[in-house]
Length: 191
Image (tube, rainbow, N blue to C red):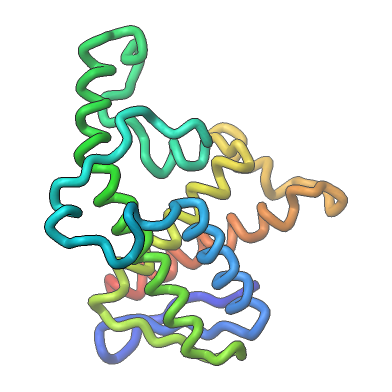
């Protein structure tokens, strides 16, 4: 996989993707949407009620979701500190729904752009205002894959040494590709 971002004259970025790359990226983003879940109350929820909706007060059990929606007051000993647990619960209750909505919109922006290729390869032009959405969506994918692969800073280099027969190899390749895409998008946004 070699699709990487380049600066575009409009201040945005562009990424050439072959049909296979576009399909993989779209599939990963659709899986991200499934992981995040639908909006509470469906897509046609009363906007006024949505302003007052409360999210969950407990952290998700899935390690990938916990990585995407971490506790606000974590750190050493936080789980044993009743005040920290209560503050984290309150913070989660009032912020997680908005955070999920933003992550959902980021993933949808990528899916819609890829759908614009019509199932074929091509160049995806990302407007300057949409670059942060793409960056967020790529970051969420990478965090999720990293969680599934149980990547730590200490063993990040070990990912390059996996034998071809290792069943994690396709996920590792996607994880590394997403990291390269993130880096190239940051460079395109800066330059």
